[in-house]
Image 1: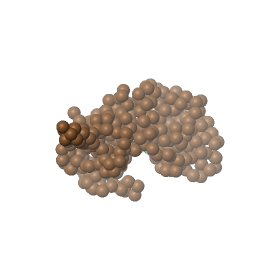
Image 2: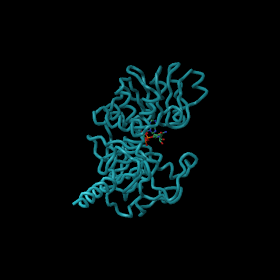
Image 3: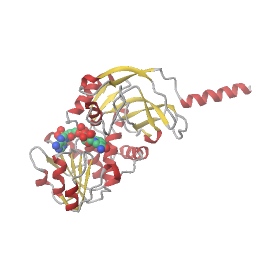
Image 4: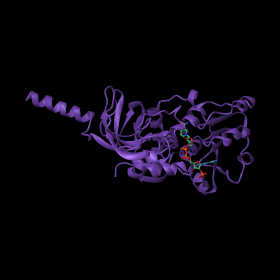
Length: 334
Ligand SMILES: NC(=O)c1ccc[n+]([C@@H]2O[C@H](COP(=O)([O-])OP(=O)(O)OC[C@H]3O[C@@H](n4cnc5c(N)ncnc54)[C@H](OP(=O)(O)O)[C@@H]3O)[C@@H](O)[C@H]2O)c1
């Protein structure tokens, strides 16, 4: 009788730590640096979570520009990877195994997570501190669009920018993955939101909270946005260099693409936090707050396209066009 109880306890303990995953899984493998030809679907071993990690059965993975930028080889200084590398940093799925020392999660929990790679695969490992509960009201495909882009928007506009009601906020690239959440966060905070995009995205931007839109292809933003309190740049290059001119003295210049122009920041007494110094990175906590905003309806997720895993290369190619509205998603479980 006693042995039966002990065996039952063991069985229930084991089932709470792992499910019976296969030994091999399908994954998109990057085998070198270059174009689309360095990626192909292959089979690799299912990873095992180490201390402080969980394994997630991937339902859907979100695509970000960093995924194809890593493939080009131009990001090796900051984003060195070991080949073969499985691209993809964002995941929505179900916890499938739990490593030693992890508390607060159990097998079967529906979650979102941000990782340093590997989400374009049937299983992925994530540090437990990077995991949050999946918003109830979002599908797995929608939830997979949250992590990298919405974290970038949250950290710049809320953590670093601390934007306030009534402030005039200009968001460059308002229709992209980061821009879409940024426009909605600024609107949620009660700011007056001006966003740039090509004309085809203007109705979309107004539908998510932009008060004014600027077609950057026909209008210089300096002519249409003046005396701004805050600028968030998600485009970079010349757009970033021209941005100090539209800020009031003492305004805030936020960027996720490159470093703010130091001379203009100092001459115009601008607040120009750099992404690396100003953020308090607690991804799980931040994703939890973002998830609550998605569940409350304050934030909405626009999914531009969903590709199956065996067409993940096409998902990356669509991202590389730089024309995506909202997020591009790869569905891993059918
Ligand atoms: N540092 C970080 O933590 C971090 C995090 C996430 C992303 N990023 C970087 O931030 C950038 C944006 O990321 P994302 O995910 O938002 O990219 P994305 O989704 O690929 O952005 C696509 C959007 O950019 C818009 N766009 C392109 N050129 C534009 C211009 N000159 N002016 C205004 N809008 C323009 C497009 O709108 P139209 O089609 O209307 O032109 C499109 O909707 C990428 O370089 C990414 O690598 C950095």
